Image 1 (cartoon, helix red, strand yellow):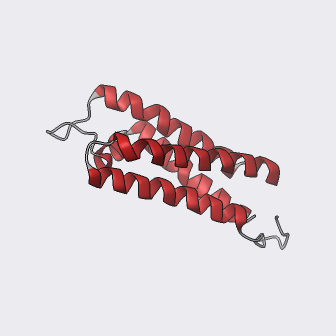
Image 2: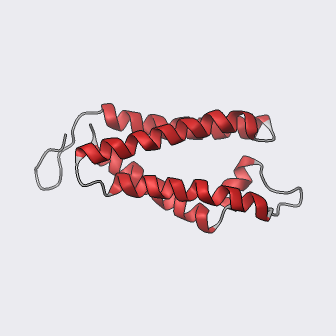
Length: 131
């Protein structure tokens, strides 16, 4: 397991999740979920915020997992979330181009987490190895 990659992936996920929780348009706009005039319907923002908060929570769990077992569990939750997002967004988004992009992004983040789980250990700055 490459714990450094997984923790960095978790930190990036947490930052993005918190950003989208604050500004749902960051996710709504590239997903094609804005109104024709570019505004974000309140109901759409209300539906996106819990997903973003979930991402933030998963990311924080990965970034601050106290040991490899907890990191592995948090990463598996992250992968399941990414694959679930891909499956749902593949059919739910309004336009094909948005569906393709959302699936690619979701599967890409999931694949990065899988790579971290399957990757070898990395040396820590103190000279210790993590597994």
